[in-house]
Amino acid sequence: MGLVFIASATASSSATLEFTSGIDSTYNEYQFQFVNMHPQTSSDFQFQVNATDGADYNDSLITSTHFRTYHRESGDETFLGYSDGHDQAQVAGYQIMSNGVTNNADNGCSGVLTLYDPSSTTYVKHFTSSFQNTNGGDYSQQSFTAGYINDTTAIDEISFKMSSGNIDAGTIYMYGVG
Image 1 (spheres, rainbow, N blue to C red):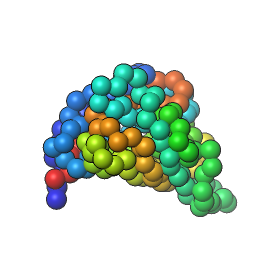
Image 2: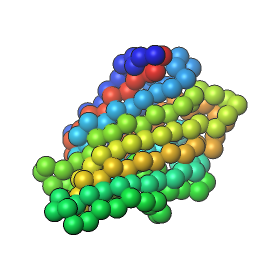
Image 3: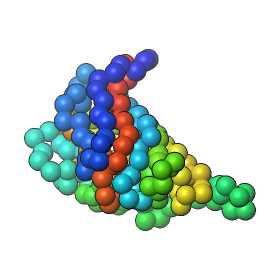
Image 4: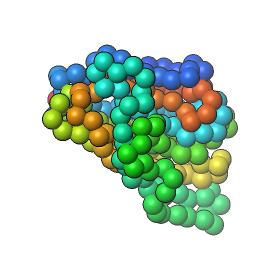
């Protein structure tokens, strides 16, 4: 199995980055790679999908779990655990993948989101993500999110945004896994 490049999107003070084509029945798995996503204001990086013929990224219900680990630069604080408030239970809102991403010049987040079988019209769509970011300016944080999109309609669009402010910079690469 290998990655087949489909498309990319680069932010330049962008409210959202969206992929509105390229997600179809060609692949059973799609991978999105995020490189140096930098927020305009400190916020959370998140996603939501749109079902075929959908119009507004607010119809698909997500159930998820989110946990993280972090280590402070000074070495005096560490954490590993469940992160309530970043999970969802049948919510139509955007799903957080990386929380507390600071907008300092040397901060941001990078990671991977995998969407499984988005063209299925029988089953819900599962996803996993793993992100590394600087949190609060002096914490190295790794976040893990997994869940499902409770929609048996084919998914053909995906949107990414910060919870507040624009995506100042960064590039997203979309691949089919074949």
